[in-house]
Length: 355
Image (tube, rainbow, N blue to C red; front, side, top):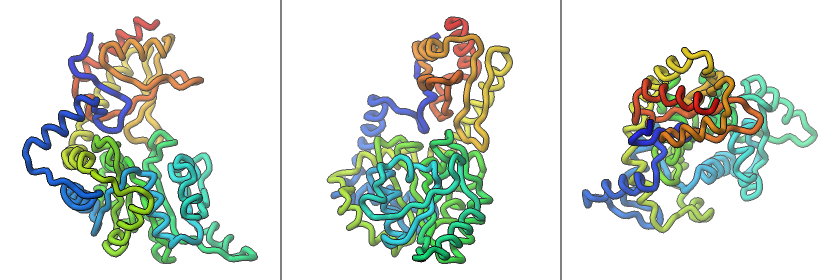
């Protein structure tokens, strides 16, 4: 059974093909109302920035070409370019941005919560106390929290602990930043508005490519006096693209659509998982504190062949990780291209073919 339209369990958003992306872009521009930007200033880019500022409940929002740049500039600004910044040991900021904050801005990152999704308020307090007692006392100027956490299969940090930490930071006049690349996914699982997350932090980063189908791009939102002073910083780091309207147009198109679409997608996925759990050979395992990622175990099956079989049916899965006996599924709105019954039948047939 080959689906007429592909379902992908790989992407955070719809996972648009190049043809689908260009069609969305073309359809949006047919109105003739798209106003061009000039080096990421004005036009539809500014319109998109205002939209995301409103969605996050912040005064201002700034377009940046990558999440790496958004996180880096946020921490550089909040820390004043000095002192130390607390981060998760397994965070994107600490593990995946090529030490850009340390190399380009001289920031001293202090990792907490090694091997875990997050850290606790008590660990923050202990860190602050230990730094004060050193021969040369240094200060923590900012705390960054990533949730959900990519390196832990998009598991959530824990909202109550976030509140404890940010309340304490506010009392100690320590700035806070939220790496919320996939914040809008987490918001569905906690039933907490993204604005309520963002309200706990001075600044928040949201990816435009993860949930909102842009080819690239990021939003950094925060108070007016902070964001309005970042245009020079963006240009200094090479982030003022000559034209950023294509990214802005697509992200703006999906801005209001993602939350209801993903909420419905997760409900559809639950129906699929229930059906897959009925046959003895399937087992769906949810990630602890998880969001949209599950692990699918298939007994007595050649897993790479299983993935290949489904690919031929228009159902795209990630390659099987070496040394694992499961395949990772990411739930996203593309699941609506087929019914749960059709998908379950395809999975069962693929397992039989790969036996």
